[in-house]
Image (cartoon, rainbow, N blue to C red):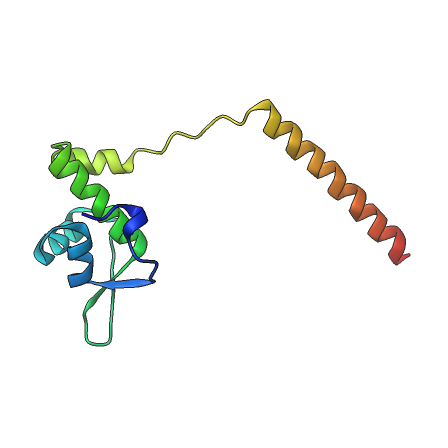
Length: 116
């Protein structure tokens, strides 16, 4: 099974390549498409499924949850739908943003003065 770092940097993957990267048979990916609404592959002119890199990453996550962590399909759906915890911005980041904003405003006023 490929981790997100080992997935080639391509726009699209055909079902055979995606199944090799994820470590499951192609029919499993087709089944997961029906079970997880986030996966909607495009179709080529010859009607072959074309998965985006994000789809392959999601397939890897689904495989890990189902096979390694022993989630059910329903439990996996819920786990994937959970929002990722956002980090609280610390005071340093807020101060940095405020400083950057004031500098940008100063540059903006200099540009406006120069125009006039």
